[in-house]
Length: 265
Image (tube, one colour):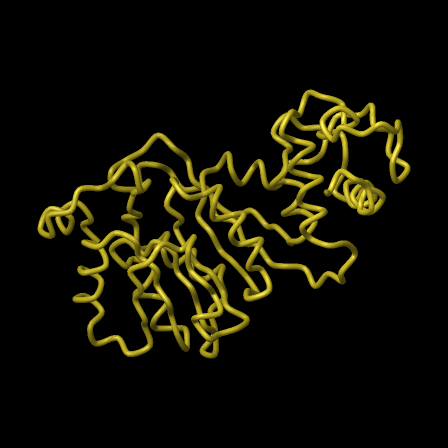
C-alpha cells in the first residue's frame, strides 16, 4: 500500500492532533491479524482504521467488522473503498463517546493500530467496557506496553499497570519500527494482546480504581498521605509504603479494607 500516494490523491494530510501515523507494511498488518486469531464467527471492532490496511484483512476473516473512524475525510475514503463489503459497518464517531451496547454485539474482539493521541483515554475506556470484549490486539507505543506490563517496584509501574494486571491477561508481541509508518516516526511501536480475566466481584470496581488512581497521583508520597488516612496500616498494608511498591493483590487488600471509610464519601 503506497500510503503517501493515496493520501495525496485524497487531499488528506496526516493530523498530529489525531496522532495519525499510518501503517504502510502489509506483512505487518497480516501478523497483527494473525495474533487476533480471527474466526468466521467473530465480531471485530477496529478503532482508527485509517486507510483500511487492517480492515481489508479483518473483513475476509470475521463475521462482522465495525470500524470507527473519527476523521471525516478518512471516513469518506473508506466508505468508497469498501462500498461493496457487506460485513463492514463504518461509523464516523469518536470511540471514546461510543456506547458499545449500541453495536448490539457481545464477545467482541478489538484489533487496532491505535491513534497515539488517544492511547491513555482509550485504555481507560476499554477497562470500563471490558465486559463486552473477549480479546484486544493493539499496536501501541513501546513505552506504553512496557508500562502496562511493568512489575511493582519499577519506576514505570503505575495506575494502568495495576488495573490492567488485575483485570487482564497481557502478552506483548513484536516491535514495529517507525520507518514502517507514514509519515515516518521516531516512535517504536509494539503489539500487545489483552484478554479480560473472568473475575468474580471481589470488590466494587469504582472503589478499587479510585484507590489505585489516587495512590499514584502523587507517587512519591507515602500511601497514608496520598490517601489522606489517619491509620498506619490498612488491610495488613503498611501505609508508610509508596504506591509503586504494592502488587495488584496488595492494592486489592487495601481497597477492600477501605471500602467503608470516609475516603469514599
